[in-house]
Image 1 (cartoon, one colour):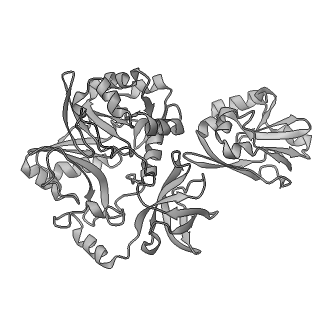
Image 2 (cartoon, helix red, strand yellow; image 1 turned 90 degrees about the vertical axis):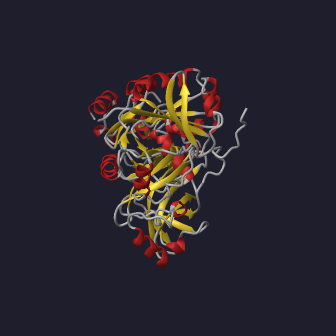
Image 3 (cartoon, helix red, strand yellow; image 1 turned 90 degrees about the horizontal axis):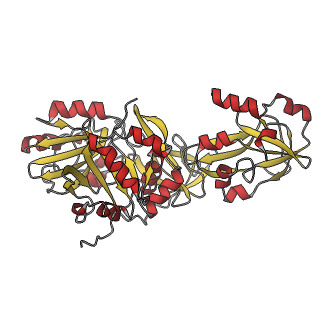
Length: 360
Length: 126
C-alpha cells in the first residue's frame, strides 16, 4: 500500500489503518464519533495527502481544463475556488474536484485519490504543460470552528482574510503553501497544501497543544454525509451524470464539455434519478445497496449511509426516482423497511463553514 | 463479569452464568472491531432462542451486524439501558454492556464454546 508523508505519525496516535484505494490511511484514531464531534465543536486535523494536486500555467492550459469539466474555469476570478467535475465522453463523472484560480495565469486543481491514475492520464493528454504535484504535495485539512484560532496561534496570519471558497498562496516560516477554504465537513476550516517533506512537522505542531485531535477517514465520512456531500466512487462515478448527481448548479451550460449533448437531452426529458440526501427516523443508518421504496414500490437505491453523530440519526444518499426526491417524501429502505425521509443538503444545518470572519 | 469465567463463540458472543440465568453479550474484541456502537436491537422478553439463531442486532458507525444466541434458552431479561446508551457496549462489554439473559439453558450447550484462553488464541489467529 502507498503511504502518505504522515504515515509514521499515525502510530503515535493509535491509528487504525485501512486500505483506501491502495493507500494506507487511518480510519480512526480515538473513535469516529469522538473525532466527528470534536471537529464540529473544536478542531480536527485530517491527513488528505492521498488526494491529487495539479498546477496549470497559462490561458491555454486553463482553457483546455475548461473543455473537460462542467464548470467555467476561464472566468473563475483569482482567489476563488470552484467545485466541478471531470466528465467522460458520455457525460459520466470521472471525478468531482475543486479548482482554485491562484492568479490570472495559474490554476490549481485538487482531485480524489480513487480515480487519480485515470485523471492524471486524462489531464496529461489534454492540458498543455500541466504539472502533477500529487507526489510532492501533502494536504492537511484543519477543520472546525476553532481552526482559525489554532492556525493564527501558530503564526498563520495570512489565513485571516481567507473567506469561504477562496484560497491562495501563504508564506509560513519561509515555506510556501497553498491554503483554501473549501473543506468537506461543513465547518470553518482550511486545507493546507505543503511540500511533502514539511508535513510531519506541521502535523505535530497542529496537535501540540491538545486543542486539535487527529481525525481519520471515518469521521471525514460521517461529517460529509451529514452535509449531504457525495463521495467519489461511492455516490458518483462514471455511470452517473452531473444531473443525476444533483450537481445542476455547477454546470456552465454556456460552455462546452464532454457529454453535453446527452446532458441537454436528459435535462429536456427530466425523467432521471437524482442523488438525494436521506435521514432515518432513528439511530439506524441506511446502508449502501439498500433498496428504497415509496408506497411499496421500488424507487431507488442507497449509495452511501452512516450514523450521523451530530444529528443522532442515520444519514445517507440515494438515487431516487424524480417524483420521490422532493424533501419530506416519506420512504422505506432496506430489507426491514427502515423509515427514512428524502431531505436536502445540508442535512446538518448548524455547520460554521459560512460564518463571517472577524478580519482583525 | 470477569471475562476469564465466560464462554465465547466464534461469532464473538460471550455467555456467563449469574444467579441462575445465563447472561449474553459481545466480546471486547468484537466491540473494538465494530467501533462506536450507535444502535442496538434486543430480543423480546419471553422469546425462545435457538442456539446460533439471530438474537439481536448491533450497528456501529460503519456497519450493521447480527448477534447470535450462543446457547438455546428463553429470554428472561434484556438490557434496555444499552438501547439508549449504546456506548456502554464499547465501554464495558462484560459489564453494563450486556445484551440479554437466558433461562432454561442446557449446561451441555456450553460444552462446545471456547473458554477465555481459547478465545484469546482464536482472536489472535484471526
